[in-house]
Structure formats: C-alpha cells, structure tokens
Amino acid sequence: MKAMIFAAGRGSRLRPLTDTLPKCLVEIGGKPMLEHVVERLKAVGVTSVVINVSYLKEQVVNLIKEKDNFGIEVIISEEEELLETGGGLKKAAGHFEDVPEFFVYNADIFSTVGLDELLTYHQKHRPLATLATFEYEKEPRCLLFDSEQSLCGWRNRKSGDEKIVKQAKSYLELGFMGIHVVSNVMLQKIVEVPEEKFSIISPYLHAIETGEQIRACVYESPEWHDIGTLEQLEEVRKRHS
Image 1 (cartoon, rainbow, N blue to C red):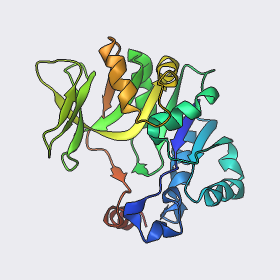
Image 2: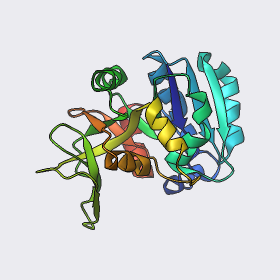
Image 3: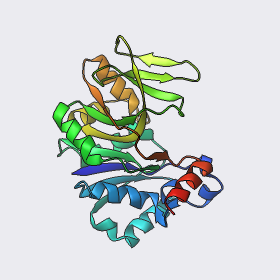
C-alpha cells in the first residue's frame, strides 16, 4: 500500500512557531506531526510514501534521514511554489500508477480514526475516491453529500456561498478530515487537469459532473484536530502530553 502526505505547508497561522519550523514538524507528545501520520499509515500496511516539501524543506528531509525513512520507502517531492493538494498529487502521480488505490493524508491533521475502516469502505463501494468525513459544525466550510453518501458539492455556511454539481432532495453537510483514499482512475483525471496549481476538490467535482462517484466514509464522534492555529495546537498538546 502507498500513500501521499501533504507536508509542504508554511503554517502562517502558527507563527511565530513556524517562523523557524515547518508546520509538519510541530510536535505533539514529543513527536513531530509528520511522524505521527507516517506511523498511522504504517499501521494499515503502507510501505511507501511520497512526502511533498517546500517551506524549510531541509529540516523535513533531515528528520526523515534521522528516522531512517521511518523504516519504509520515502520519496521526496519538492515544490518550489506550493501547488496545493491537486497540483501536489499531480506532480507525484508517477509514483502511484502501479497501484489500484492509495491513501492521501494532510500532515497537519491529528486524528485517531481507523484508516482500515476507510480503506474497507472504499474497496466495498469502489468510487473514484473515498473521503473521511464527520459531522462538524465549528468549521463554516463543508462538503455536501446525498443520502447514499455521494459527493454533490460544497457550501460555506457562514457566507452562504455554495457549489452544487449533483442535485439531491436534501444534503448532508459533513466536514472533510483531509484524509482520503484515491483510486488510480481518479489519479489519471487529476493528471489531465491543465493547471499545475489547484485544489483536489476541483477534479473531484468535475468527476461528479461526468457521472462518477466520490463517496464519504462517515465517522461518528472521531478524535480529529486540524493543527492550524496556536490555540488548536495547545488544545491537542494538553490531551496528548
């Protein structure tokens, strides 16, 4: 099993901590976030990961060397300019063309959700991608799904902006965890996007417009934290000191 870890982010909302430290190396419980993510992926059989790097990339590369590649194959994908999630995966696509599906995981996400459950759900329903989701009202941005847990669009609950590409009688508003399983078929669609820098949600929505399925694996009351601000970081550190 393979995985892509997005670790290139600057983490501007974590300043001044990230003035001298890349976001993916921020520690919880004495361990960098990147290491937490790799260990979770290894636990479900991942033996090869691609990690994208950009801001203070030397520090990330040095940690990987110090940890002896975490005991698995680690491939570094360097980005001079941040390519966002879709562009980052497009740049690294060649490493995933030999597998039917692979994990994609944001390095700033601290969670204990069962990745084996996510993979099992994906392999049972065989959509182009399966997103780890949960009911989360704190974040104004959410994804919209129909009764079969198929992606229909997105909505900003604060501004009222939305984009719906698949109509349904009603929509389930779910928070996206930044963890997903992506199929090789979806990967090829991402490769075909003409832009170099784009969010992965854009080709997901385009796939829906052509009649394909992107599904949600819904977790009930999971432990999930986006380490995006100093306040959020301290909250998690208190729980996992």
